[in-house]
Image (cartoon, rainbow over all chains, first blue to last red):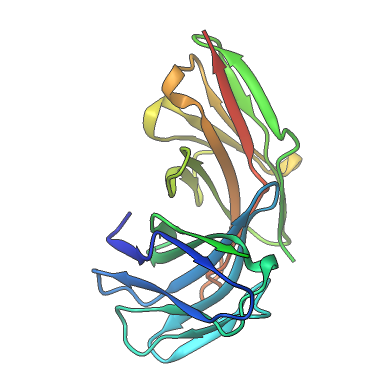
Length: 110
Length: 115
């Protein structure tokens, strides 16, 4: 997985609560991504970061914010969680023309 | 905008039988194409990729895929499946131009293997 780690592995939130999903890479690659995976919908890009300090919206950015303060870490924040954000979240980095994925965070919003 | 269609939501194959998973893409320029596999509760693992050159590409675990530009397809094949191949398979397309780094994924095909 090209050294992509995610924390936590599981999380249960109540509607309206906030939380930050953490992603880190142990390699010095520029590009990092956040996806969500929902049954029957494949993976959809939430945000990506082409380099430290830059971020761009993907296909489904509403309700999320991201932060890329350094090259190693790319965090995803839910300011006010909603049941529609129940999903599995994957972080990825880019090595050449390939993307490598972390193990995922399973989030349930009640 | 690029898109990927995986027309088969679920496929069941007998162990030892051959397998073909379909993938059709839409993209206006030369695409980069990928197949990923996801075992239950796991992340995604890259099976194989096509960037250019030989249209038949070999991947890990005995999988291969053929790029057919005329049909906008990139179907995944395996001559003889094993029970451990049971998983979900995702096709993805990316732009082969510098600076566009986003991948678009299909909705996936779940593969069940029966004895």
